[in-house]
Image (cartoon, rainbow, N blue to C red; front, side, top):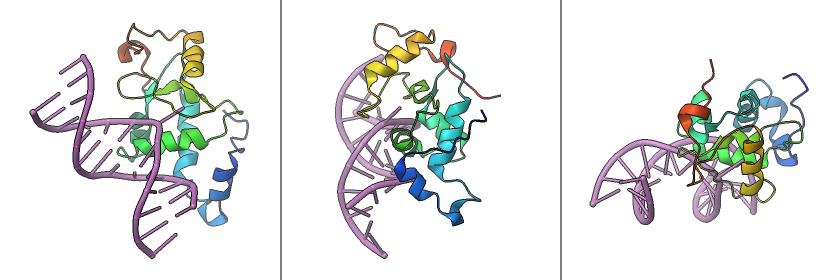
Length: 125
DNA sequence: AAGGTGACTGGCG
DNA sequence: TCGCCAGCCACCT
């Protein structure tokens, strides 16, 4: 994905100080990983944290996703909790929208509102 | 600089 | 399986 992943929300832009250039901020790395998730696939917050080398930072991932500007194609909706459930509380990216976007990609929910990891889970590789 | 918050998780009853 | 609890970690006052 080459279109300059540049534009971040105001807050994240502020975090991007010169000194931070070499080592990308956590938020920014979350952004990159999320962009690698293929359509119709999902990953958990903890999964992303693990890919970044900080398996305990799941909460930080959620934090980042709400902060991140997604007008550039960041598929934030492909991230769900460990149970395959939608758990967003973010005002701009509500649960209804997330479900709609996932279903539009072919992701199926069971009657409890859960997604089957075996069918739709993504593992980079 | 220290404390509070939260799109999380694993463990346990 | 389900709910609850206590860590955990990045961010924001």
